[in-house]
Amino acid sequence: MSGKKISIFLVVLIVIVAGFLLYRGHAPKNKTVQSVNKSTETANNASQPDQSAVDNLSSATDTSSDSSDTAAADFNALCENGEWMKITDLSGEMVTVSGKLRKVYPDDEASKEFQKYPYFLEGSEKIALTGKDETKIDNFEDREVEAQGVKATDGKSLEIFRIRCAGKETDKNVIGQRNKELDFIAKNINLIAPKKAPYQKWTVDMVDIVDENNVYIEYYDTVEDDENSNVETDTSRKILVEMGAKPDGSYSAKVLAYWEMGEEDYVLKTGTDKFENVQDVTSFQYDPDAKSWSRI
Image (tube, rainbow, N blue to C red; front, side):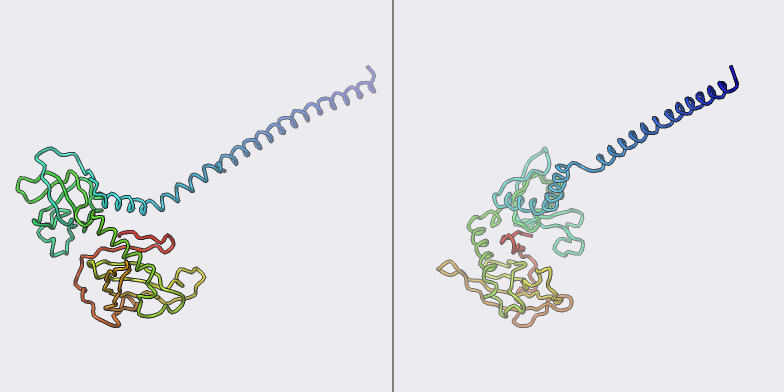
């Protein structure tokens, strides 16, 4: 083979080898890029939850935020219907006791003799109460109840088997009149209040019921509910009102005492707080949006 032919052969061979190497280097690179892109796409999709899952999670969160209100409403319905709430299984001779359920507090003089117990019953007889699930029993605090359980051998305490509301807590007439009175207060607070609202109008915040005829009402100017309001002062007010039912179904409302909000607490401006030493009141919170009351 001549030198010229050898040179041509070598050039062709080099071109073929170079082309082959270039192809090998190019093909895997494209394949790798596609694989990486596919993996990246999969990872991105995995990090983006399905929209239905997002909706469900949002719904669950919303439900969770309202769970305490729902639980309170459910308990109030159970209480007003006088339904039994089981606390724990017990064996032994069952006895029934009734009265107001009180929680024992370290500095409370009234519960001093029951300091080693979580609760006591204040009725015709005082007796300590114990139970397996305090979160359930707590709901009955300061309510008239009927409890069934087994007395300790010393007769000083009762372990609760089941418990329910009783007395006025389940009296439909009392409940109906109370709800009617609360609704009257919510609708007529601007007529009951001794002074006009400084900005917009008054709305009720809370009502503490002392007895059938006397209530404390806390209220405030609705301007505070406006997110765009620049009012910095606390517009809260409080009044002690003597209520009276009228033949036409409405109520009379006589203001006995009036408070305005001070730097830290209410300051009495007029009248006399004739129930200042009364601790046993029934409290209700008003929701102006839902126009409904909830016991607290």
